[in-house]
Image 1 (spheres, rainbow, N blue to C red):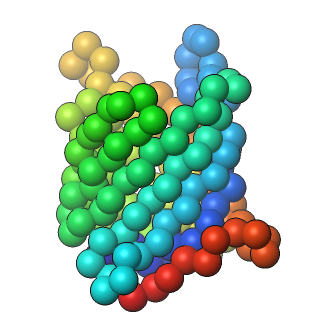
Image 2: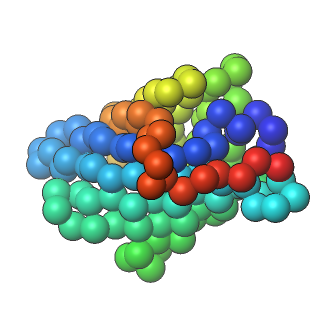
Length: 138
């Protein structure tokens, strides 16, 4: 779990889906450790072409479980390709996150007719504004 420390903090997020129609995504993501450092929480608050979407994701070892404002739930495996590169994989979606000190990029793919296809690109910049929630580290 300690390898996920690079995610901790507040991020401004933006991105778009690939294909037709293109959906624009804007908002914020916050990663914080629960006291004890056993669980990493990921709060998502974005708009998808003007429609608000919120989610909570809980990282527990090599598993992440998500719960969203549409009532959907999901489970993904969490892995590290190399330092700063996080892999998420679910039954029909997967992502590769490249995490730097102040920037993160994510490429998402979806399973479509048995083949993985590029679905969405996200960009994140660290939000250091005073109004950003402080993220506790273990």
